[in-house]
Amino acid sequence: MGGRRIRLDPLVVDTVLAVVLAAVTVVYSVQAYQERYRFEDWRAFDGWAVGLCLLVTLPLALRRRLPWTVLLVSAAGLLVYLAAGYQPSVNPWSPLLAGYSVIVRRPARSAAGAAAVVAGLWLAAGFAARVSVEVSLAQSLIGTGAVWLFATGTRSLARRNAQLAELTERLRSEQELRAQHAVVEERVRIARELHDVVAHHLSALAVQAGLAGYVFDSDPPAARAALASIGASSREALEEMRGLLQVLRLAPEASGEEEGPYSPTPGLDRLDDLVERARAAGLDVKVAVTGRPRPLAPGVDLCAFRVVQEALTNVIKHAGPPVRVTVALRYRPDRLDAEVADDGAGGGPGTQLPGGGLGLIGMRERVKLYGGSVEAGPRPHGGFAVAFSLPVPAADA
Image 1 (tube, rainbow, N blue to C red):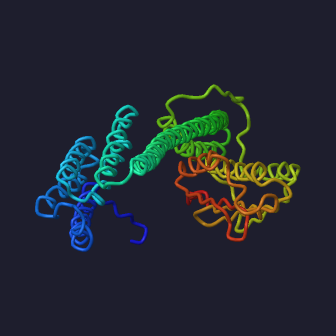
Image 2: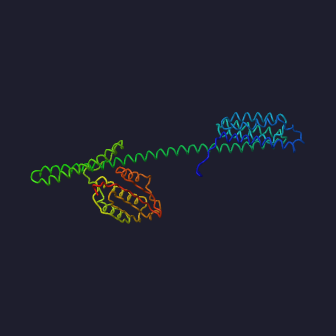
Image 3: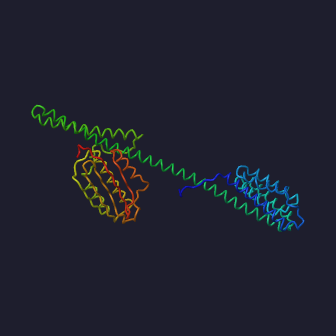
């Protein structure tokens, strides 16, 4: 509740301002006439004077919608008021505010015309108040000049705010496009890697089918084992193919990068190599494994490896050595939980946030594909942590 901003209707604000200004003008004029001006040669402040004061002040309620009309009506009321011989000490302030409204909202030529009208009214009020020509001219120039400076400054500020809002909206749109482009690129890369996984399964199927055919008569148990392996590999290949098709539906076009079709698909079995490369880059990396390590489905294995790789890469890029990093793997009966956490010693808390968030986008896309979750952010006592969890099918337990 405390953070909510109350937005008032400008018409309501201007109406209240006009009513208050009218009341102050009338009450002050009546009191001033009774106490001072009735002893001077001024016309008595009667009902006509009240009506003319209301004509000068009340149109200010529409000063934002009809600025020129309000200025002209207020100016006409003031001129009649002055011509009737009433004491003019209070009424000139309303046309000054009306002139400000024109200068703020109209082009330079129109604003200059409004300034001239206000200056003429103040000069006429000075003459009607029976002050010297010098004083009348000075107060006319000072009053009009102050309003001009304030109004043009307000108009310039409003223009800069509008330009800033436009630039902010354009920047937000560009950031959204960059994020979408990064998602597409990451999905295409994932699809390419899943293609390699599926190709591996199909190659294994071909070998196992050939073996089963070769030993079908001479070694039936070996043939049955090969057929069972074909069934298991087929099911895994189908699961990977479903993921591949899902990614390809979301990626409108592939990038031009190509990788070797026979490159081995990495997994957590290559974690030691990854850790050694991180240590060579200057990181102090420790690996902690809890639970019973077991083989994972190729796609899940690849996903876990890539997320750990991306997390270590972000530490190298955004925290820098010397940094202590802990890679924790927890094998649970139905899940694989992992965390890559650093102490941020190289750059202080929060400095290792991935630039632009594109690395985190890739992590989320990969883990989401396999029904997992990712959390990433600064640690309470400094450093940064990436934690993810991947479901492991019961058959892999």
